[in-house]
Amino acid sequence: MSRTSKPAGVTSHPDWCAPDRCGLLVPPLMTHMARRHRGPMHRVGDTRASGLIVTYLIGADAQVPFVAVHATCRAGNAWAELPLPQVAELVETLRGLLKQADGHQGADDE
Image (cartoon, rainbow, N blue to C red):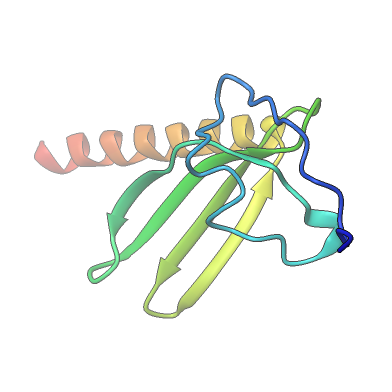
């Protein structure tokens, strides 16, 4: 009997990787998306009310990780893998929206 594939090598995980999730939850959809490491999931929102956002780090060996963002709502599902500079831009945009909303609430109180 001969093996048809090589045995898997030993995988070293980066500090941010959650080995129990690594390669299990989101299989590659296309060959160019082969990923090996996944970090812990962070959830925000409620799927039944207004929607849910799930984020986690995802990456391959010896590369800077991306941030995976999955959005789910009644209208459907979407996902993106954002490089760190785009994540920083998104965070700044969200902070700006929070400041605008906070300033608007203060104006209504007067």
